[in-house]
Amino acid sequence: MKIVYIGTAHPMRGGIAHFNAILARELAERHEVRFLSFTRQYPGLFFPGKTQFVADPGGAPQPAVAARAVLDSIDPLSWLRTARLAAAERPDLLLFKYWMPFFAPAFGTIIRRVKRRLPARALFVCDNVIPHERRPLDGALTRYALGPADGFVVLSAAVRDDLLAVRPDARWRLVPHPIYDIFGARGDKAAARRELGLGEGPWLLFFGYVRRYKGLDLIIEALPRIRERVPVRLLVAGEFYEGEARYRERVRELGLGDAVRFDADYIPESRVPLYFSAADAAVLPYHSATQSGIVQVAYHLDTPVLCTAVGGLHEVVREGRTGFVVPPEDVPALAQAVIRFYEEGWEERLRAGVREVKGEYSWAPLVRAIEELARDDPDERGGR
Image (tube, rainbow, N blue to C red; front, side):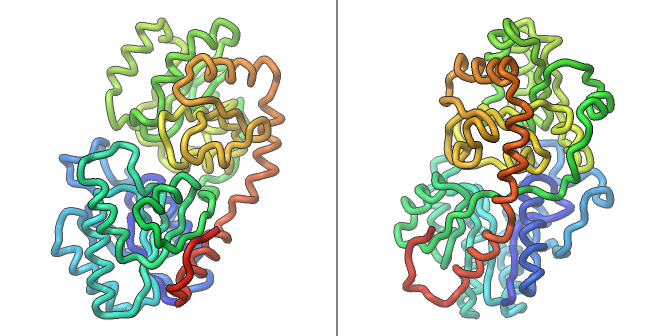
């Protein structure tokens, strides 16, 4: 099968680009894959971070499938150019990663233009269908992008339900988010802490871009309760996409200056293992979610996860086996889960559980789902 994969790719940074690189690698073992990427993912006015590109492109892991940068998210002429290049490959399948409606006009236009010229099928791998932070046109944009698609792989049951609300006739497969396997191996905890300058004592990790829905505010509010029993500290590692000053001020108000460390920048791929190796557990106290790639980074690096029961998080974080799951928006419950984790000595038991289950999150089921949906059986509905 010949596949044209359209999405973010190296040297663009972030979890979506990592996901695309790994999936393209896995598909290329069985199929012919061409990758068309972005020249610009977001205009500067709408991008909340410092840069959209890795600081040292040569130092980041190189993708197995090289990408050609042609697509500008806000330039319709580039959408048409991308469609022409895709059609020129005469693909059997157009493959997209979908995570927010901002890209819907580009993706929807490309699919329609290619389908006018070829009988290619179009498939989306969906992180989200309904975005975390909603805007008035989200529904119409999503329908425009997903309307002409022939199949969908959803990464959680929550995303499946959102998809069926938009496309009740959708052909779909549910495949849990696979492991991110590009970050090397877990290292020695003491050595990682020395390299990061953390010192001894209990450390929790909050990792990744900071946005409101990820609930950093909740773990900060829980810390005073936790520290009445356990002298835990919080390492916040990731670039702030909103309100860094507000979080820092709240830490000062709660008297947590020595208990919270902010490494408020994008963490390069080469240093990701250091942060997870230094931590006793990763904490994901999300207000809302569909699923999270952070869980799959944590699993790859043998790190237990403490999370809230939102979206699909509880589908992959297994209570008492790979982590603890608490009700959302419940600061006392979150604090009690952390206290229990330390006082009852759960770290090694949960770490062992992570090692036991992470093999279930390989990329092979995702490749199979894509292959199934790419077959010419348009009358098939539903999924598994």
